[in-house]
Length: 234
Ligand code: ADP
Ligand code: MG
Image (tube, rainbow, N blue to C red):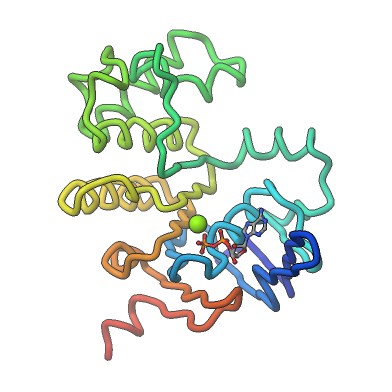
């Protein structure tokens, strides 16, 4: 197995005036290529901080993070932006679709920075939108779709360029239970299909159950790390 994410002795401290918040401490974590894992913890446990560090959106206070063998904590903002464009896809709780664009245009957006022809972009966009069950909605705008459908557009946008790593922070936080399961299933199916690494942050054990591996985080530390096989044997 090749490592996709290698984290060593990671620490992140926030300062608010005199107050010091240790959001992450002594985090060591390896995630392999093609692994589908959940980071599970209650609110304030450090999940988003960890995901933002992996995305290179925030710098660690101490420690190192390698993605695909590259030290991201040493990259400049410009290097990081390119690196993210090339290797990462993001899915957010709030979808962040552009309201004036159709589903297809939203999904094709990450490809426009890559020098791919319009025809090829649209082919890829239509294919991935069909994969997430939105074949009939490609010309709809976000306001003409349900929350679940909007998040599927968000998923299609994250997957369309086939990035090696997909990061999702509470991706179903705004959805009802039935829709949540559909959406999570779709994400994990796609990641399996294309052998991508998927990291989902959640506070919900039922969502975590869709993953092959659950990394429990509490007060900024990894408390438990369980893989599906081990869990099923219990
Ligand atoms: P989670 O995503 O698990 O809810 P976070 O990673 O957002 O947790 O936060 C972990 C801890 O760090 C919390 O105590 C939170 O208040 C604190 N924290 C997060 N971001 C900031 C920030 N920008 N400034 C100060 N404190 C922060
Ligand atoms: Mg969070």
